[in-house]
Length: 485
Image 1 (cartoon, one colour):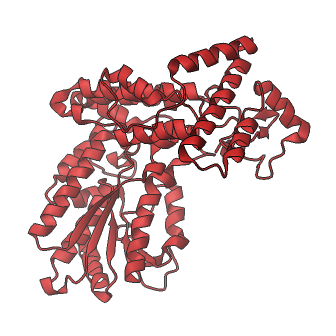
Image 2 (cartoon, one colour):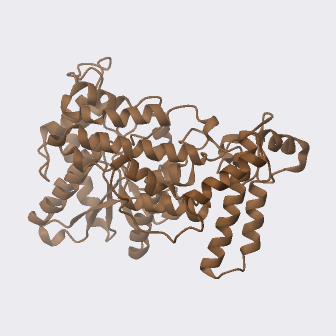
Image 3 (cartoon, one colour):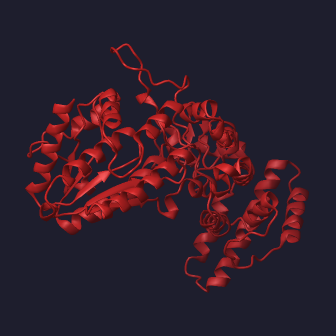
């Protein structure tokens, strides 16, 4: 192991000195990226000061829906990286990257109504993780001509990851591979620990002090706490399990059946039991069958048939409102759970995100009931602290009267709801046109509302779609779920 570490340190120094390209190190706070950054740090610190000629950017993407314990660990680590680098005279610059507002999880799930991610509609990865880091790397490579991206990827972690790493082979430069993303065509990939096992990583971390001041034993403890039996045994052969397989990520992730790491943390450490409401929210409201809570139309109003059924689209207004209430109630429960642990500072959804959700509901969806402030006040018993919107044309009494009239016209509940939404949305478009004084697309918007609410219920819509009158040139019958947005 010692020989391999020295070989990698020599390799890092050689690559660093070979050209003026800036380095970007991907850092998640986990064991692999920590080992990778620690190797880079150690190698560069051994160089004479006059040879440390270029910056090393350490980037970490916070999806804003990470496991709170891991998110706090990473944030603290980035602060220490910045302080330690200055103290040691190293040009190592940490960057905490976050998704843009339109890409954030709650804005898409609750605001736009995207269903919880699933294998055929995995909308979260690019929006939450890839977009922010790709933007940073792209800007860095374009401003410097090229850049080197250092990753803590290892072969053998999973078949999928091995396939990705295999794509990086065939480089024209020894140990560097071209990035396959066309947006990052000027970026080279360098994986210094690609041939290490999980146990190699732990041996290195436990045997070598962390140069920016975190305790690698504490990191080991986090992984240990995230395994069901709370054990990281001494590995004596390939049949002995390791704790290195713990997986941390977004607590809202529905691409796995259970969040085993958070569940184990709660089980193994009473000081982390304040996360139980978060786990309960995920299991009760996200990892469930949700077809009944989704509109029978796609986001753009089109009808798509798959196996003689309509492909349901975004979440309905009542379900989005209920999800928002549940998220805020979960945040309140967490903040009240154990303030000795600082849980009163936990923020699951920000006021800025609530403002954007409110804007989408009122301005884009025409839901002039303006429910966000009402829900916030119900949960926290204080006035909504976000930005004000333009006053809507109808108050709650007017809307209640409109609902009553719709029920009188349409005796059945579903047609009555559709008639109410049609009338309300037409009034919303008319009001927005009057406020903006822009009438160029006014008729188009009115026509769009009429088309969207053209059916009294789902049965009428399905009959119309099956008649062949609603053919969608963009539809793909082999993947109906992917058409919801």
